[in-house]
Image (cartoon, rainbow, N blue to C red):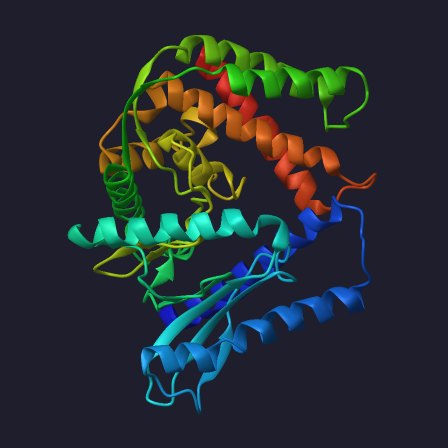
Length: 370
């Protein structure tokens, strides 16, 4: 009973965190509609998704009548164009209806769904690792019906270990092993790393900061991060690595876990081939949530040394000594810090927390550089 209560509490905290993060991100953008208009757009997206159900049910031989719909968590940045709903039929079958109504990214969304379908197919031969099967797709839009995946998010599973439920190291080993399998079945062959496209972006952004055309928190520290990226790029340049199609948004809420399986959802890539970037996302997408807590010895980038050891054991590689991974971890910090540049004059608490964590990670990276 206590475990169930704790899970419910964590669910509420997670929902609040997702909502707060979405508000933080939205606050960085100039509002273009009223709150009423935005809420109307959210309700419209949900209604448009539900409108597909009769056709889906007919095509799949399911009972359309009596189905129940439950809205699942969606980052508030996308609620006006994205709907994810659990569908429970009158006979108790459960599915996930996912729809994206964004004309500006429609072609990309369809390619991402192709990527998801291929990953689901490739993972069928892997015991204990999966992506939900796509059971139905609309021919002209990014609307799909998928299998419902049992389990909790990896984010929540890891949080539960803080209260004595489960072994943190074992959870991280399982995640690392599953990510390794995803990258293995998405293999793109041996490649050499050429950082020039990334360095052009870094140099251009640094120039706008120096010219006062792009505002960032602590600009001198930010420029120090840009300089570090150039040094990491030199160390990684021409290094050979095994390419793999990335997941593209591999944070721990997009990994679902139960006792027997680890599943990947919400792909956001169809052509990127740097698996190191996926792994950097795991640790920094929800920064500072996965940095070393008090009482744990920090390792590379401020992540607990024991967490790195467990994840690397599962993944089967020493990531933190790999120059290419170190570059992409630093690159992910650069992207995070750059997003902070769209702050308001009086930052929200979340902005302050992320900014402090970003600076801490930079300090750890500089220390590791020696």
